[in-house]
Image (cartoon, rainbow over all chains, first blue to last red; front, side, top):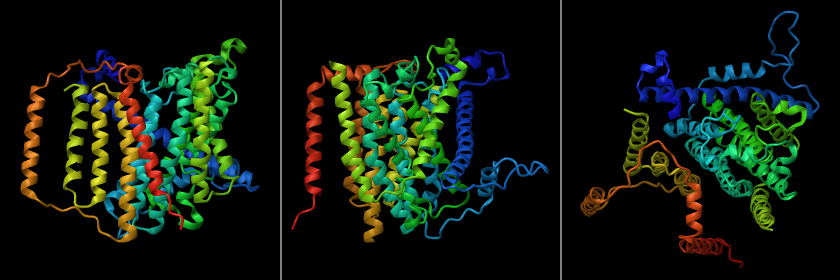
Length: 363
Length: 165
């Protein structure tokens, strides 16, 4: 950030006359806008994907009607504009706040959740140079900053003053706090092997093709670690089969019951941004990040820097597809099964992988 | 005003305002929200001082753990038992005297202390140093803290266990 500001000040553009503080504010706003826009576009694409994937898994068509509207080409496009239309509709809807709700907390809760997710994107490595802040404690920062999302969900549940919302918020808090433990522990497995918390160091340690990826090292310990990490992050994102906080058959929509219009859109946006975040995070940790799976094959063509964002986004989308696949295949867990999975299955196995990798590295 | 100063004032004002909200608000849930923003602002100041690991730990432990539990406790007691949790003002005079004394003591310490001055901006990696210090010079305090936490964990599990009748 500071180098960027100095570079702009030394350049001969119209911006060089501005003071350091003014430039800092401009860049803060600019980066924030870029991430918010990326999150919104991702959400649009992923919502469409989810609808189509769920439709195909359940042997139906999904949205087909909303296309460009050009005559002749009217029926081509598989309803690609459906999510655009939905987003537009959400922005125009009336924002309803219940009378008995705590107005201020009701307002800030979705934004706390959204900020927690967006802030974590600032350390995500989309390429060797394509990262806003390649900070020394990157992985740890992600774990820390995403813990804000619990607060957003609890506050949303409390402020709505609705029994379903409250139950949803409490379920979510219990769930996220429990699943933070295995998901934090398995990150240690990778950090131990690389000896660094910096994302680019972790990715660089996996360079050289698919066989160097962490998921295939220390077989099968890292594979188990990946599975634990995948399940725990799935639960932290409140996705099915761990979507008890918004179980629609019993809690209407859980903590989001009393939200409508733009604020509800923010919840939705955070969920899909969170899925994308998890995709990038897991692919950086286990699936080689922005390195290509081919290594030096094809004369190293796919290892050129221009391919880096392509690879990591492809891997992230693959993980998102896996998440959607699970959502439309598995039934929802019961509360006791949820706690059993976290404390009696994932956490002990996380310790086993840490211990096993530690022993393997020693001998 | 430089970039560093601007960031510092944003976090400093944030910390003071939210701490004030935490102390003066009557509704307990607002106190908890004030605490959230105060902790986050102080984590920002830690980062400016070059203690990035400490800042992230503060967020992880206080925001993700302790504050979530606090809110959980407030929610459980207010909404399910119907008890109104409100804070009031008691014992004005003794409180003021103690606070003034503490303030003077802190002020004296701040002016007397020899601060380690460092130019802002150059962040050095801290994790390696912290790891090495914990495993060498500070090993005994580290182990004692671990055993203490383990005892607390076992004790909590024992107390929370349902009695079999």
